[in-house]
Image (cartoon, rainbow over all chains, first blue to last red; front, side):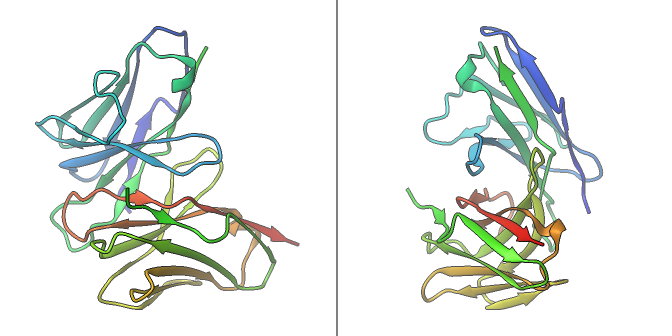
Length: 117
Length: 113
């Protein structure tokens, strides 16, 4: 199946700094990618929908100025957590759907564990 | 807001038995449903999907049932194995391009030897 790769797998940063997470579709083009956040023992919560070449669409309650999303190409979307604080510590997961085919299965990255200290 | 939910947060099953994981959804506009498996520290892994024009779909050792009348989904895993231990999520979407996938609350499946 299609592969979505996230980098880094884990990151530890100091409070107040910014962290960038990359999401790449390795063998297919994804005009749309999705970013999720998952706290321990909870479900995946959709943060935003990232569209190639346009502004991201954020879910209610997600601060767009804090979680900057850039989708510069059909294979890369980035999520930047700005001025990170300990409460931003979470598991961030991206997803991409295969476009233009019969199957609209979504593929997920392996996730990025962010710890803010 | 609308959500996808589950009846049971945890499920313990004897190895070799069949597992049934249930899910309720509330968005009547959703017409595409997916089951995912998530192991600790990893992203969700696709298991099986079903469109609303079907009420049953089978894969390898897994079957998904959809009851649109009561807005209920279930995932059946035959001959449950230790490797099936994980958290299982149902999710809903609209079967068209670029529609977001909304996850339910998840069920942890543990296997007794």
